Amino acid sequence: LTVTKQLRLILPLLLLAQISGCAVMSKADCENGHWERIGHQVGMNGERDRETAFAKRADICAKYQRGADQQAFDRGHEAGIEQYCDIPNAVELGTKGVSPTNSTDTCPEYDYPGFASAYRAGHKLHELNRRVQQAQAEMDRLESDVYQYQRERSQLRRDVRSGDLSDDQA
Image (cartoon, rainbow, N blue to C red; front, top):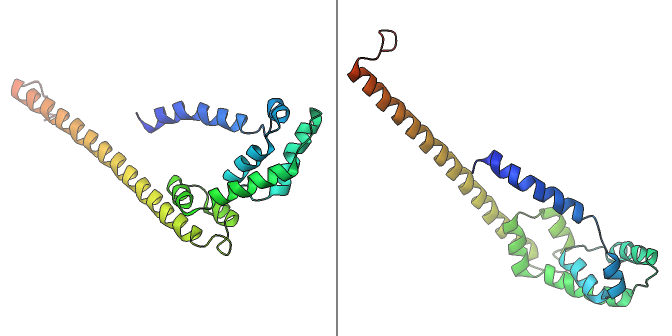
């Protein structure tokens, strides 16, 4: 697929993801009240500001006349941040090209030693993979050009042999 075709396929999915990502909590989430699980997910997403994250969700649930359990949320959030800030996840975040500012701010070196260097190693791998993909795309383009030139050359040879070329074309 060409880049343009790929963008046409991916763009609607990205827009849908953006729209669906706006809803922090659904009514069902509020009714289920799994606050530890919700806090864990928030932490696993790298959201370090626990108070703001909880307040946003508690306000939504208040509209549905549902309570919120901050202690359970905090326990889950702490566990989620611990998982988010572990070394294997740092490498994975880097290889995915996740913004380095967000990740290193969420997992400061004094709390999570080695996170930043593991992230940088993963990010370097991400950049190298991106360069390989760019080089592959350029090679594909050049191969296509070579193929097109070979076809044109073959056609010109056939035209010369058959005498179909005018003096201006030859």
